[in-house]
Image (cartoon, rainbow, N blue to C red; front, side):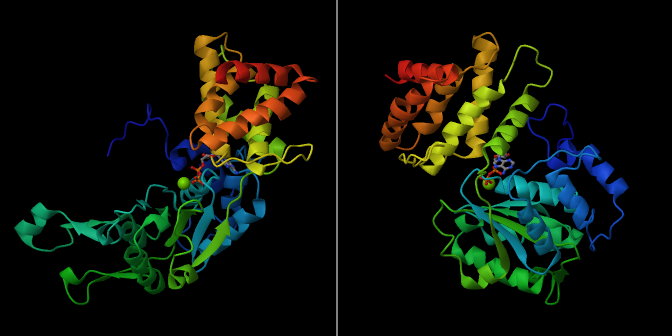
Length: 364
Ligand SMILES: Nc1ncnc2c1ncn2[C@@H]1O[C@H](COP(=O)(O)OP(=O)(O)O)[C@@H](O)[C@H]1O
Ligand SMILES: [Mg+2]
């Protein structure tokens, strides 16, 4: 595996936040559950932030959810994070595995093509042919590695897997051991303490409800919801975009422009304006993740094509790619939103006026 991480687009959380994790470990006086790198309290601080230790907040919104998630992972059941796309399920599972096991890389990506080999183990066929089945010829899956090392393993989009694969998980999770019949009748791997599973599932995908009840029983379900608090969501988008442009003098990201973007997202997501007027919600998911993408792309546009100051114009221009993605109906709804809500606000506020006029000019 490549160790050249200096140019990586995105580092694993345990590398990105190595300093924070070190400070938390040094200050950690509480008991650590077997196999854990940090105590439950320190894990919480890693995710929700701690000013004294200069640890940043990484998940915004539902703090009690984090406590419940950590408690679940100490117990015998797995943790299942469900929710709309872009609600930070994957982010949370990455942060939890990085803090608890120091390794967020043991991940199975669920797809329609996921097989039993992906879940258990496969073989290095050259070695298998040369020497027959041996420990050396066995290629362990991420789950195998996690059991052996007493770490957490992530299972992304578990409901996309065929049902028979989900069933393999049932015996694995209840017995916490994995048989390797090719290495002899008794050959098995016992999960070491610290092993557990964090699965994620999107509510938009078919299948969450078709998951067998036997498998459901092996997980504690937590629903991750979009951020409801306007200021929190603005904080988050601001933080993520400014981080991207750290050290770039030419870019300025005014908070009121981000506020306008996030307000638009929240209103189209909820199907209701701040003033309480009902509007038509969209088919497209207006997730925080999408808001971050729009803000980032708009800032890039400002940096490279304009004078570097993000304005409602770039937001309107980048918004198109999100809201006109899924359906014709969405396009109509968004136009209606601009013709009524945005226009009305534009009478009192120059930013909203600029937003309205730019969108009109672009989408005619
Ligand atoms: N509540 C939240 N707290 C922090 N970041 C969030 C939150 N909701 C969304 N995000 C942003 O959305 C991004 C993508 O989320 P992701 O974990 O891929 O979503 P999911 O797996 O639920 O589809 C995150 O990296 C983060 O930038
Ligand atoms: Mg995800």
